[in-house]
Image (cartoon, rainbow, N blue to C red):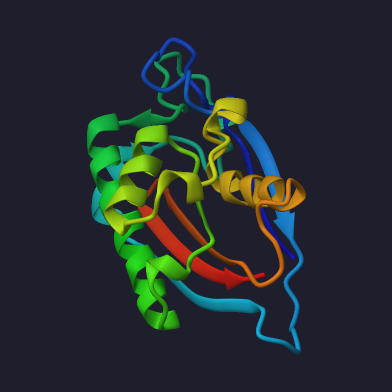
Length: 191
């Protein structure tokens, strides 16, 4: 079982209008098992680069001192983000990760049935798809319902797309994500 879950409401500074309107809480999970047909994971890629950690981070907290117990009054236990820089890195790295898995799988962007990007920002999703040559009608978006649920955004979106019939057997789905630290990844899956 692969699980993506976030409770960002507990680390959101509601006085910071640059971040408080963006984030939501959510969870999603998938059962991954071997298959006897050509469905399954076609390619994956994951990377991180700690040199950019100060672009999207929480300065205090962690498992040793959970952020819920820190109350120093200056908002240091909350998400801090440099939105413009995060935007640039997100588009660049989600595009790059996507191109890597497309090449690894030996397919073209025309073979992709649906792109399910991290639901961080509509402009990030649109620009990433445009750079990849994927038409907007092939990009699943639900950010208007939940906000940015971080690690849960792709699992929630894939589940919704599947339940509404936008993902069917033999479809090739590109999933790509970006997060704090900074981290980014992509996966191609044939359903």
